[in-house]
Length: 425
Image (cartoon, rainbow, N blue to C red; front, side):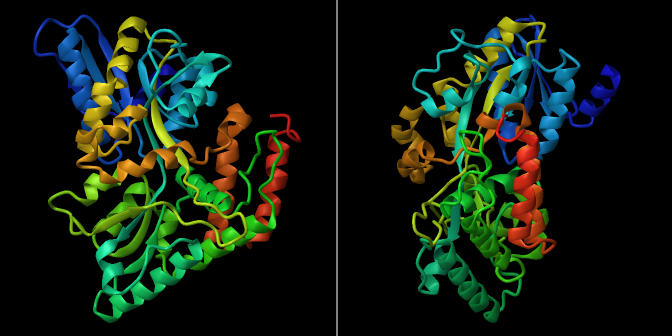
């Protein structure tokens, strides 16, 4: 069993990803999994290498699949086998409840004062702090500032306004010769990213949160139907059919190549869009996501972010905890914010002028982060992965035209009620 898991792991591991300190002989080797999304792998490598040089240890970086669904499945296999082969895991904001039984309690071992309290609470399961916030995130609307100005358009307040503006600017650009221009791109693949997009659409229409804090399933309601009907109308109208296979990087690729007016994505995209070789450098603006054009409609951004956790099966808990302490420190979070626009989990850094210089939109981000819409991982616990998969599949079926919104939501509510045993999650 363990050999099979290691074989799967090796296929996702960066060849030669060993970070050797430049001074004292290594004491122990700590393995850490890092995402390969955007520049995350490089920043993780640099931070881990700095820790290795400071402590005299070695660090082995393990690259994991870009897909959060695939990464979680790999983690679950390794941890179920009690494998000691990864000491420190990078975990999504919705995974602490799923993986908690396999993670060390870090209460009292790492100081979390100054971090967003909401995220610390999210990472506390049954009174145990099982993960430390590394960066917090929320969905944002990126837009081509130059194109909106050129065509006399405003940043949309509602999703309906986005639909109309995206269509008008797209058609004007196509008439001017760019037949590859689209109005809006987002994460439409049937995976965790679509769950977040879908929750943003529903919450912005005051349509609930799929599963409410009391455990009741609320996804089948008229406003949810309205939200998904609008999103479905985008496909092949203002959004390419290929969006049904887009994750974060595919969306960014289209937008950064200059072929989309709007994009929903995370803050990590900002420095990449403004890199020296980016075709849209200096042409991009950032805004809150639109609200639903209904009574009670709000600007709703999905809460995201990553944490670092220590496996219960590590052979070197002291060193693994120290690596997490270093990587989640104020100094390291500041470096990552400046170099990669990773929004810190330490609130005070949003007032640091060195952080704000390359990331001016950080100034207004704290209220958005504090009010971001969490996925129902807390109430659904270990069943969250099934809930998310069912929701993403239902939304994808609607977007692809395989199912009508009302049908899909009725079927989804019945499935989720069975999964949750009528609210007894």
